[in-house]
Image (cartoon, rainbow, N blue to C red):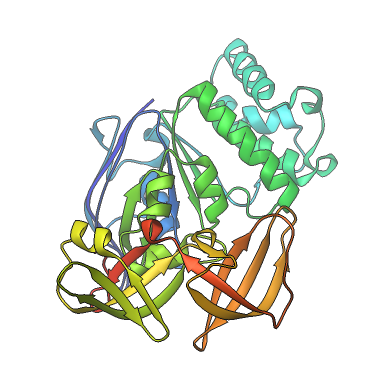
Length: 357
C-alpha cells in the first residue's frame, strides 16, 4: 500500500492548460474516485500519476518518494485501461503473467500470484481460455487480474467499465468493491458515471476544467455540494434550481422567487446570509414532495416510470421541476397537483460566485 501526494501539478498540451495548479493527497488503502465530465482532466491526471504523461510543473510523490520524472515501471503501480488490451493469442493465464515473465519473476512466484488473482476474480475455470472465448466482463476481469499480479502499491483504473453493458457494470462494481475490501490497496479510479463514483468511492474528487471543485465522502458531496457545478453534475435527475432573492425581515429570512416563497431562516442564519442578495436555491428531486397539502401548485408535464419509483416532471412558473415519487401514482399527465419543498434539505448558492452559502 502506498499513499499518493500531488502538489501544484500543471499539465499543458501546447497552449492548452489541462491541469491547473492541482493539489491532492490520496491516503493509504483509500478508494479515491476522480469524477467529472469529458475533458475535465481526470484521465490526464491519472496518466500523470502513472508516468504516461510528462508534467510541466509540480510534484508527484508515491509511497513518500518523488516520482515526478520516474519511469512508469519504477512507480510500483498497476493500471487497468478502458480497453482490455489483451494478447489474443495468449491464454488468460499467459496474459496475466506476461509482465512478471518479462521481469524474470521466479516461476513459482508467478504461479502463486496468478492463482491468487484468479481466485479473487473468479477466473480459475477460465485460465486456459483465450480472449476470444470470453465475454466482455470476463475480459475486463482478466485485465484487472493482470494489474493485480504486480502486487503494486497503487492501482489506477481508467474508466474500466465504460465498454460494458449495464448488468455487467453492476456486477463488476460489486467485485471491485469487494476486491478493495479484501486487498485494502490504494486505488484511484476515473469515471464520468456518478453511480460508479457514489457506490465505489471512499472519497470523491469532482473535477471541472482542470481544477478540483470538491473533495468529500459520497454522502457529503451529494448532500452539501460546494458550488452550482457540483450540485448540477451529481444526481439523476439533477438537482432542481430556482433563481430568487433572500429577503430578511425582523424575525425570519425568506427565499422569494416568482410564485414561490419559502422560510429559509435556519439555513440563512447558519450561512450568515441574512442580507438581501441574489441566490440560487437547489433541491434534490427526492426532497420535492407532491401531496395534497403542499404549499405550491404545478401541472404534471411528464411521468417517467423507473421500476421502483417514478420521476414526475412538474411545470411551475415556466420551469420544469422533477420529483421522485415512490408507491402508486394518484395523478396523471396534465393534472394539477400541489407540492412542498423540504426546507431542511435545500442548498443555497450565491448567484454571482456560484458558491454555496
